[in-house]
Image (cartoon, helix red, strand yellow):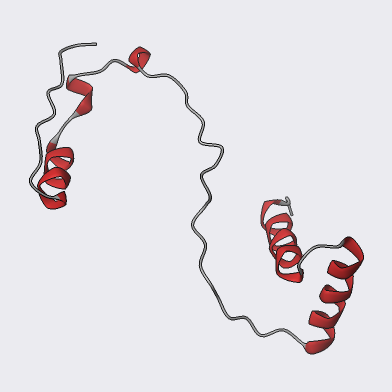
Length: 88
């Protein structure tokens, strides 16, 4: 640690945001001061979207999801994720 960081009491979120925005943490910490942490219960932000797909395809996805005993929207997300992260 380079020097002690004194964090003031903030009157509101705007004041706190401005404080952190202007602060250069490299003046106070060395990379070795940090430790890896895990947030196992943190869920990623999601957003609703609309997508048009042929009815026969949606029906097939629903059938497959039923076979696997999972919600069809979860199966669609898995398919999208697999497609995005698969090398072409």
